[in-house]
Image (tube, rainbow, N blue to C red; front, side, top):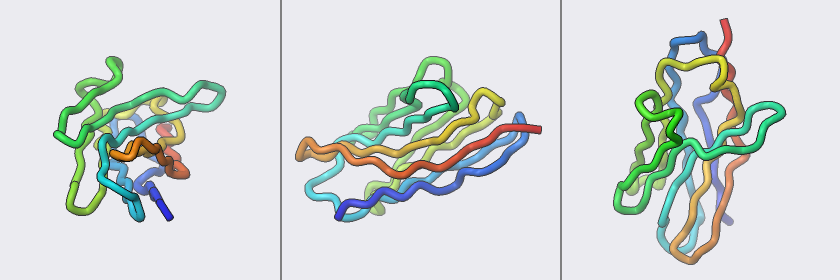
Length: 116
């Protein structure tokens, strides 16, 4: 059974930082792409950042320079370093993986609240 478990969310003041982690287990085949999405209250889910099997990264334009995605392929983990957080970054953050078999999997999400 495939499991994606996110961690690292919480309450942080504006200007602060958080590092999200996502651990993937039970996946068949190899991981082709790992992606972070977020969904703010009352808004649609949006892509935050992705990292490919070859470490190629992609970011939402509005987040470039503040968020950094990385991975540990040996541990099947993906990270999202979030710096200079703003209240508008408040959202549920989700990890998703696309395997080389073509199937996608999602985690349950971790909540990030940016507030003073």
